[in-house]
Image (cartoon, rainbow, N blue to C red):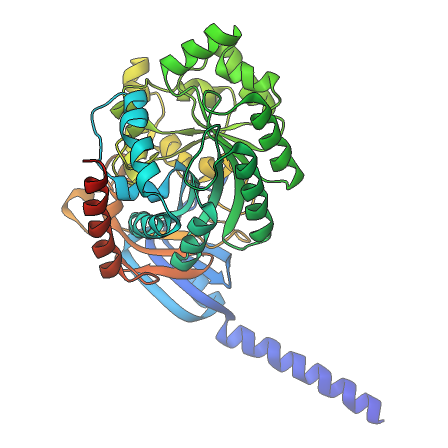
Length: 465
């Protein structure tokens, strides 16, 4: 009799709980509503008068606002009726701390820029604190313009990781391995040791994916390139490298090896694992076939390639071949000068049109995809990033549509590719946490970061006199 009473009590409890959930809705942490939700899911749904529900670090639903408001009882709401919600932008190639060298040497060739300005400035100024403050400055700009994941290659990458976590931005961060003495390692062997320590330290981190970053085929000895690949594979980490950025690099490698840079690296076994190749400007059909076969993702950097007159990457050919292509601003020290990824969307589309003399090349939707789901594919993270789908990580941006340049709106992809700027981003969420509200970064104190940047400007200028 007592057991029957217990059973009836348990049934009554769960019935009451079910009624309560039905009456008040499923609990969730956030409910974001907007004029449009641009999902970038496989069917490319654009949900008018839409909503996104977030619990913890994950998206739990996306759909019409009316339906989700009935279904969920959120702890917090963000209503943006004159905005759109989109996946966070994914930067597939940059050098974040170089924000402190912004504009130090413009209007130069890549080799002159590197050899006469950047390498000397870095030799005299790069320290862990330089890297920390440069990353903070970069994170401010990236978050304010809608980038939620950035792919980096620099020195003292463990400090970049610390600063990224402080800012609440996601990072795929590559510790540089190069064939000559640099700020954090006097030998390639020491660089590889530092890289392994970095991989161990950040294994399993919710925001940081540690990577191995041999600089390029022309700066890194063959045996070091092989060791970098082996290290990356041992830790199941991505490898990031510059590839075929300039015609000079291409010609020098062909002359020395009778192979293209892409083919030479393939012969070395560098593509035998998860890989991201930055630039990929000088590629022939055979190179593209290798990248496709090996599953290499390509980070296209249109601003950088234009500014340094490096050439125009064959993006439409890469995409047609099934190669994953994302976008990156590259470094802000002269090869670009900012981190605005929406600007790269615009330039990527227009570069392909003018270079192919085809106005249909790389349409707006495809260009925006490169900054979202395409970037996630480049990084091998498409199962968790790049689109607004149930179960994916809640990396989201809210973009303002209430401005003169945003009206009239006929097509959201057209606006995202050709109209909207990084300055139109209002709110940003990374891993389910709001890190930007109404354009203000919540995780960093902007004033001290800007003051420190000015201090470094004076110091760096004096060091080069």
